[in-house]
Length: 281
Image (cartoon, rainbow, N blue to C red; front, side, top):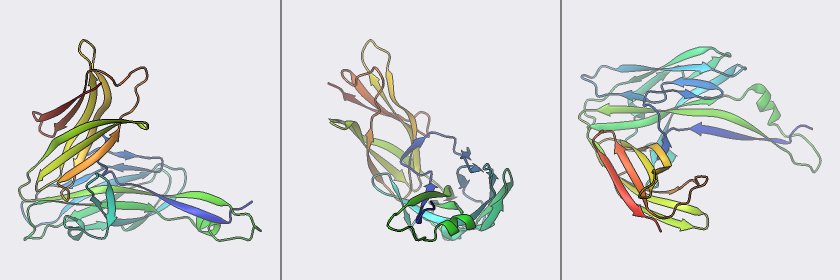
């Protein structure tokens, strides 16, 4: 029986979460449909006003021909570390960017390079600016046809088709940059739902700040137990302080009791390691 309606889900990977798996800043995104490299595009401060171009390389990894629209979308970080889509904000890089193509088709294993050009206006204040370049799948004619309603009596059926989309962060830097990430506070709370770590991170300066956050359980006379391995933490220019609750994962055969929970932040400066120790009962 054919579905009465199709429910379309758009999956967008923005790569801007407060905490994400640590990866090299110029790594790659490898998904079931698109292989994208690099996963993040940076335009460092330019010496003059001439435009600068970067390439984003794409490969269709699926076994079907796929069509994509390319567009800029702004995502702004909030005070709880999430990101939300907005039309514009003070530190958007959208006004300085041009790109081509804006639509493309890729056969299986076919490759394409998207050109992104940045041109910085003369009077732009020093600091960094960011946005995302979104690659969004165009539904095939077959999917569009299936979305049309059909008479199936009183029965209602839903067929979930995913419209694929992935966003690549674009960061434009201008002038002299300065920033630092500080681990201000950390607290632990045990509830019926599990053990939670509350953290407060502060960003200073005129640019984003990043570091690697880790959590370990230390008991005197025993080997430390890693609770959270190094995770990349990034605060964008638009937020000065982020508060976030993190659910601590359960480690098989290990109890979070006694000793101390050590919360450690390693920033981009290798010598800048900050830590807070929380006693555990």
